[in-house]
Length: 267
Image (cartoon, rainbow, N blue to C red; front, side, top):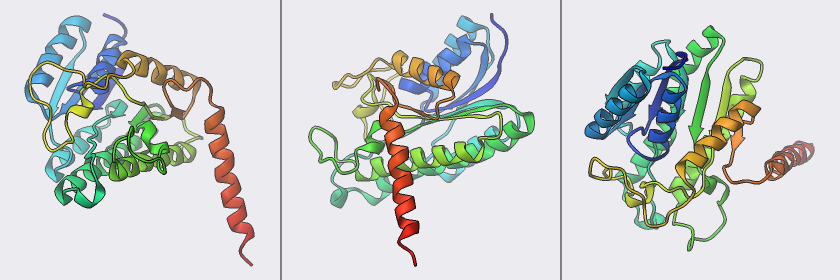
């Protein structure tokens, strides 16, 4: 058993990026608080992490699209002992916007936007008081694909919009907290070898064993490697598989140019 690092809260911990990231953090000595909708999967994972790493594991069965579930997890995140928050839970709600069920649309926005914001708000004050802490919010490369048509990309207006929020929220929060010792990151994976595309989000994928959607994608461990390396390097935006960061620098320059031009047009 390695040195204990503190407690990490991971949402969407029952599969995919969340499960693999939680396992990596536990291997590094983090005790974990695992949050997901699927109780059996959380219980199985807790057994594996406890036996494999000797760390302490809590499980919270919660649906972050429901106010009660979010309130329960936010209360736990705000108890003052969370040193690493991974806001990974997300659902896609893919499909034509004009045909999207309003209830599913609200669910996508509640999970992808409201829960990310609320849990960060719950955890960050204590991190600031303690003088340390890490927040990783999982977005998507689709946040940067706004005007591209579907096929081969999914019909994604609401999903991409929510992930665009996560990118902007995280970058702006990182700028606000730049004078602190907190590490803030938005992780923007592309297609990843998980079961994410096997459900639009109305209900979780069934079964106790993880699966992988037919589309394949980048291995999950490579996504986590990229995230951890970016944290070590102090990079706020992490796009796994991006060979260099110049496109992100160009994006920042373009944003500055737009703001400068807009200020100059007033008179």
